[in-house]
Image (cartoon, rainbow, N blue to C red; front, side, top):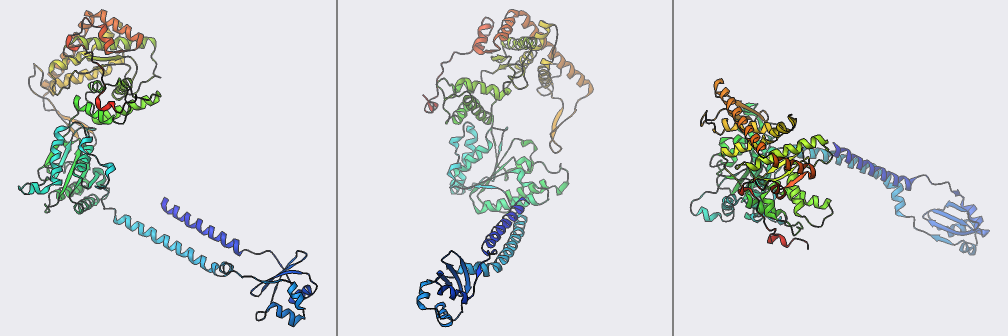
Length: 631
């Protein structure tokens, strides 16, 4: 509708401009002094005429006193002959009158005669063309409604080309995908042995691990056309449109074979059938049916590989996951410390690093970060350095960027009263002390009472190495550390505040998981309780089917309560035993608000276990970063 009014406005503007030009040339002329030929003859005889311009039959007379007159001569005869023969004017006087012949001008004839007839026809023709164009555009949109909106990245588009060299980590996933690249580049190598090209590859992994980046790297390595589309772009309110778009997408892909189709967030259309609202006429199910047919139909000779990505493999339809549709399922995990270091180096290639930057140390402080988180960390550090008017990104900006990504921005306007500041300091000191004394708790890297995000203060605990398995002792230590702040408030102030509410929630949830999910209860034994699942078709609603009796439920509650009580007792005993160290930590926090790892370990040097003492590493700049650092 906006385009319609814009075009209509343009046509009206053109019409007004043309009409203005026409009125300018064809408007009423100012009145002129018209005389007869007889009077002109008398003026010539009296030597009053300075010049006469003759344009066809029209005469323009300029008198010596400045007066301008007009007249008309006979069509057949010249003006000089008419004056001499009809009015007996002396030829010498005629010559003195200076008769000049001028061109009448074809433009004036066009403006005055032809243009008034042409303009209406031009305007009507433009209006009809405009209406026909609108109708044609509507028809085109109607005809293209069922066409795929997939974007095609051609082989010649080198600027957007990404290879495996641009993707750090995920070594096993890249090895799996290199086979797909070989299939696309050298298909006869496999056909000669009777191997069949894989129809599809499903990339599984949590958000931010680089599923889309890996798919683009496969297309870049294979150097083939790459169609990319989101699963939600297939779904429309009209039944059949999604299926039509799937057919059009595969039709385009077959014309460009060998090529790759990448469907991001395939769970938008690939969820299990038969559980939606609408039965077989559900638009999403029709779209999924068409995808299944296109991927494993009667045509098996096309070199088209479908790569799909999702972080919800549990909701996908079983028919989509079987061999023949998605033959390969490649799992992308969160990066370990070496992968994080490599990812940080890639994202920091174009950043001016300072000489004190230690990428390895940043990788150690970011366990659980995905590739997207690390990219965001580097960007936040660069923004912080720019805000400080620095020419280089230093270790300080990188460290503060970690805290911003993990906890949120620093809330400088969130001012605590003196009493609240004291409570938060003792609370965080309790967390830090319990975490330090317990052998199975992670080492403390930083303690702060500066508000960040929703936290009034925080104690940063980080593992010494990446862990894939967790023991019961580690879980019990984590519960005790969570209750360290709660126990400190009880012991120091004989009062409780709302500051421990989140700690209690975390501790209770972890204790219940120990019993119901991990089977770590000595009383109930190696069993799990409750069947938790998501209602994926009716929103993100969690439901739990209770597969145990009320008697067992009471025992679970007793076990959870017992774990919490024992952890609380453990935290309280530690706080009482090392009251001196607790006081030192709290007072130091109230004074300087933040304690880094070295400062904290100095305060608890006589009680910290040896395996938790931080190594004094020399800070060295990675070799591939040195070249980009500004001297």
